[in-house]
Length: 237
Image (cartoon, rainbow, N blue to C red; front, side):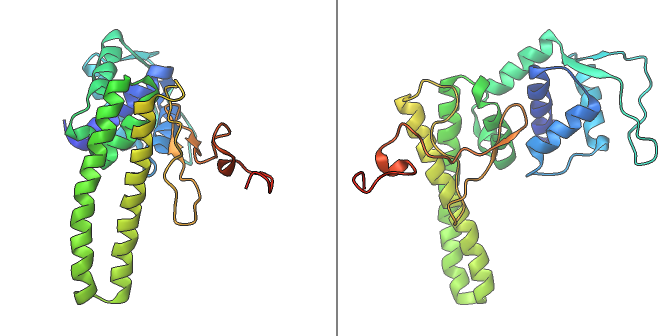
């Protein structure tokens, strides 16, 4: 199975692990989860679902009802509801436990992170550290490329490369915070206590949770020191 189809399989199994869904609702949730990566069409989703059914990972409820794809003209939706089989649950747990190099890549890491709340802490640590290592390697290449670009390209090309470099640097800082939190286990929660990576203006970048909803995680920690909290008095400053 290719890398892209493997990412889709992981996302489908993860979403259906929460609750059974019909194809229309599943596609909406997947577009939220994968939207930053690519738009998902029915032509991509349904072959994946049929493959997972054939492998025994999914079960179709009401399979005798013929499905007609929704269009602007007919407005019809699938009446088939997909749910995980016991084998599908086992497969999802295997994917959650994968902390190898594939889990560090851009697409796979984003989906894996979305299900971190269901992932073993030791696996989370290996994935975070592996992702950080991969990005640090990327940073070295980007810095070398930027140094060469200053001599060969116009200012706008250089600025574009600098923007990409800063984006990777922000993610590395964010990963450092997450790793520190996991090591310290300060909150005892399954989710991260550190904020999500921020843009150049300091605005929190939304991340996607396992239920497919975008959620901002950059708000200050109310348990932190006074300079982390809004509305502090002059005496606290």
